[in-house]
Length: 270
Image 1 (tube, rainbow, N blue to C red):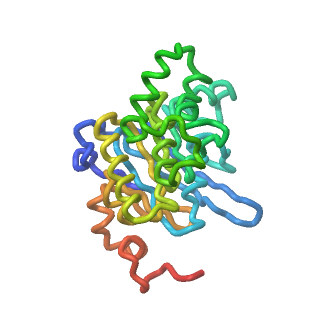
Image 2: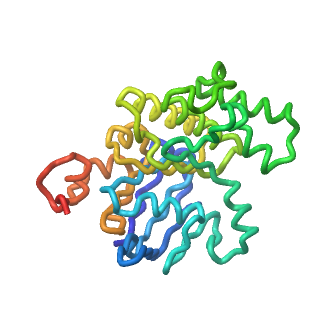
């Protein structure tokens, strides 16, 4: 099923969006793992300078989609375009350079256990730029301050809470000033209060910095808090892509069932 793009001027980020402008376009993508056919001709183009949440049942291909976007998985068929280029029709060196324009927040923060929060956050700048340590310190501390972590810079990941690790991972994802930020279930493992607080941080940072944000989540309250746009996946296809208002008001049977949590509908226990 082909994803539909709603009028960008109806979104909260509409003042920044450009009609027909898509940094990330996924066209006809198939992906199998053994006998499991995960993505089945997936079509979805993400609205620029907006937050899109990607929702759907477990096993429907959300994280697999994210790994295709960042170039960690190659499609069996179809095309993944980022910044106007098919990410699998460029050289490995060019693909590496494209990845520098992404920030990624993984489920557990993916922090290095042997480094404190400061060094974890500084890592991309030290590896991928020639900035001086004074320049790096300014960028790192600015981003840790935004996340409320300036007092924890010397702490190791195992010395802080799960919510703090998520925020540190978010700070690290931002230090390269990325055009695209990807979130792989950022609310995973958090209690409802910390989930809400993290959602508010994502919303606030995007309002300040802009960019194309894609949030993979199961959490409907998170989607309601952060979304400009919503994509709903099921059985490896995009069932709907539109503004948050359109998604949460949809009468499509599967979309309505999933977003409202109703027991009756096409989604069962299989």
